[in-house]
Image (cartoon, rainbow, N blue to C red; front, side, top):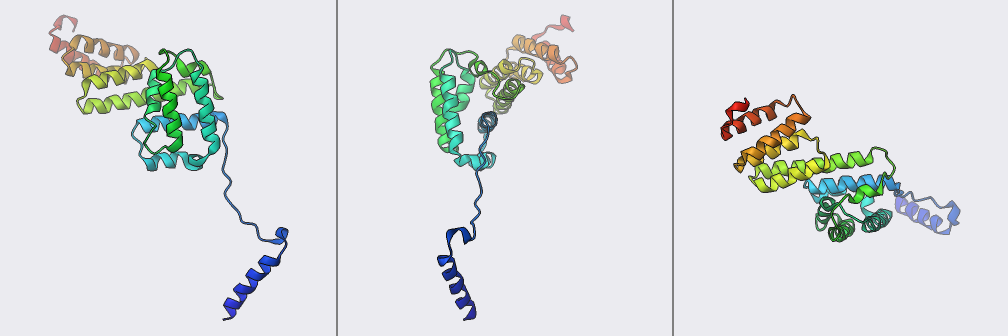
Length: 234
C-alpha cells in the first residue's frame, strides 16, 4: 500500500515540476560519418553482399547506419556522380544490381538503380574517375577488394563445376588486380577442365611470372604440358 502511494506521489510530482527540473531521458545519438567513411562502409557492404551475406550479416555490418538517412542521401549523391562520368565499371555495376532484394532495404534499391543506369554507359574506368574520397590508398584497396570478391566467386564456381563461369570470374579478378597469381592459376585449372590445355598453360605461366616460387602453379603447368604432350619444354 505504501509502495503504491509512493509511486503515485512520484508521478504527481513529475507532472507538476517545471521542464528544466524533470529527469532527462537519455537516448542514443546516431553517429553520422564522413563521406570517406560512408564510401568505405558502402564498398564493404557491396563486397559482402556479393560474397553471400545474409540479412543478419548485413544489419550487423551497417549497425545504426541501416536507418541513417544521411547514408541514403550520400549514396544518392554518389550515384549522381557516377552517372555523370563518361564511362562506367560494368563489373561494379553488376555488383550494385545484386544489392536489391537481399536485405539492404532502401540502400539496396538505390544501389540497384545506380547499377542499372551504369550498365547503359560505355564500359571503362567508372569509379576510378572520381579520385580519392579521403584515403590516399583507397583506390588501390577498392581494386584489391573487388579482385578478391571475383576470385572467391570464381573458386566457388570452379567447385560447382561451372567452368565457363569460373573463367569469367577469374578474368574479372585479374582485370582488377593483374598480378593476382592465384587467379591466373585457378583460371588455368578451369581451362584445363574444359580441355583447353594451351590456354591453361599460358595462365599457369602468368601465375609463375608474378609469383616465381608458386609451386602449385608449376605443378599444374607440368600436368597440363603432359596432357598436351609437349615434352620438349620440360
